[in-house]
Image (tube, rainbow, N blue to C red; front, side, top):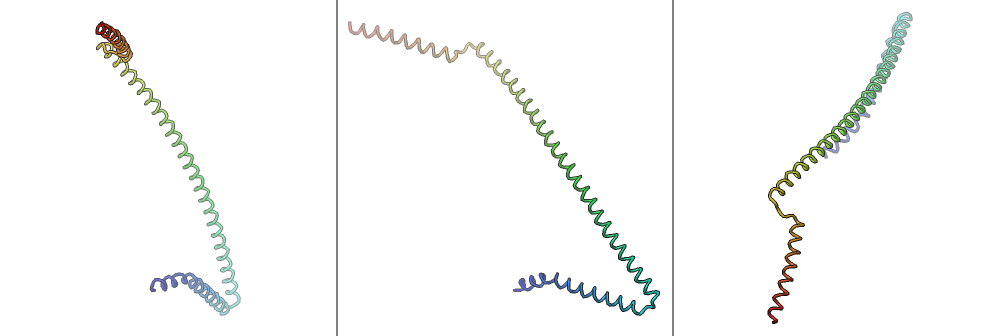
Length: 159
């Protein structure tokens, strides 16, 4: 229950602050008017003129602040644009570097494969190893010879 009460109090705080500020501003305004009423006409006019100058200066300062804020926002937008362009350039450079590395990798791989093929061909030709086609021819020849020999043996048994 303590949390819900605390939450309600915190929600009500901004409204209370606004009311307190409004009341304080009214009290200050009443105090200034009462003080001005106590002054003679000449000094009262001078104080009001000074108050007007202060209000004009405050307005000028607010306008300058808004103008400075717009300038900062423009600079920020320019900076964001520069960062985006730089990121795009870096991405483009990265893509180019990746493509270049891929080309180099392919080139080196094909060179290695060609070298390995040459070495394998030299080894097989030096060792005089039978190829798959050689083995296939020999198995056909052997089958043919077995058929011939098999045909002779059946005739000699029959006789």
